[in-house]
Image 1 (cartoon, rainbow, N blue to C red):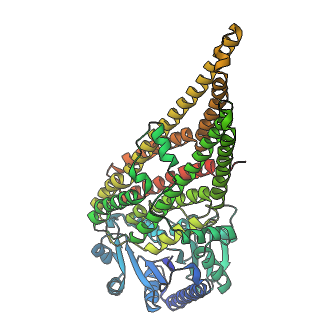
Image 2 (cartoon, one colour; image 1 turned 45 degrees about the vertical axis):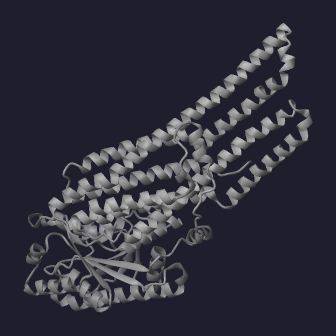
Length: 591
């Protein structure tokens, strides 16, 4: 994980800032950036093992409007930060809207020095809406927001007060730089009052700008969760290695035995799944980023997602196979024990086989529990599905994933939240020009290449596991029906004094006792895997995502597309959270 820290700025325009306040504001902004950089570098030096061996990256995100935006951007560049500029509308029109010739010259110089430039599809004739969109984009791409602000509530759309409130409710930390001489610079962060959702004028979320609070802020934002167990989970993820051949194939064999699908060579290796993932990302690039000339920095994201997805798929098959192994062999062990009645001369051999099967079940459960197949599957699947929608959220420029932790306490509590936040941060701000026509095409492209494939996946998944659940139910009914027939035949034979009960009694005992054991094993597989519940959840998710897909195809504006993309990400994560809640207690154990 590279060490990246992004700071944004929002502030009043030049006509609001008193001329005599400019030197004081410059000094205050410089002090803020100095403190943040000093704290960040100290944190990196102290926690070097948590980050990759790359030079730290300091990003500064600014709309570079006249006034506070330009002042802060110039100071950041002087201090060696990388400038990422976001414009509310097309460059020439935005330049013309600036206060005076001097502001336009400074704008030109800042554009020349910026590392990336994002032009949003705002309308110059509806400037307030455009500035709201710019504020949203700035908040989406920064960890800390410097607000050069008079401290008053929002007086209308698009103002600094509205951006501050947006940042606070989104969990973004704010450093309030007052424009008056008497005010004190302070930190506003919802994590300072983690019990309720707070507003900008609530003193419970405010702290003075001292180095200790800056250090605590950056540690909370940038470091993995302090919980020792979560740190161990993260270290295990970083050490993960996969073999080329999958040895646990019980689950695909079950699908074949139930008539759901054929057994395939690809069930032995991840090579085919890896190729499918690469092809899917290539289609996304061609249809979304490359087709619209937007650079969204998704190379690292693709690599991280692909690895997490590959791990999740491996451990899903391993864990499911482990359960099938235990249940099936448990039923077989009962049948072997009963088989001794039919072949007394092989009683020792049957007992030895039964012992070996019992030991195999215990060993399988021990290895699965010790190696945390279950927990690793759930964690890696959640990580992969947190990472996947980030490509679309980043592409839209103004969208962002929900903050880690909770709405009231946006600090990562789990390592997967920290990791996903770090990848989002490392991607930086996208670069390119999004006009209104491009925004419409983007919505349709996202429907085609992001949402529709997820709808298709959930529909296929629901159909497959529903069929599997149905077939397993049929197998179980056949086993119990056979038991019922044998029991009836036994009773009839005993009642009529027929010889077949005596002649075939051992076989009747095997069926009447062994088949229920096998039927119970089949039921155990169904219950443990919750195939029926998974099918229902997948269909519900597909239905909701289908509605979002249809909305994205309606020539939507960029803000609407961003809202829909964020909601789609939430829906997929909500589905995963519910799925995890159902499955997390179903570990691989024999007790």
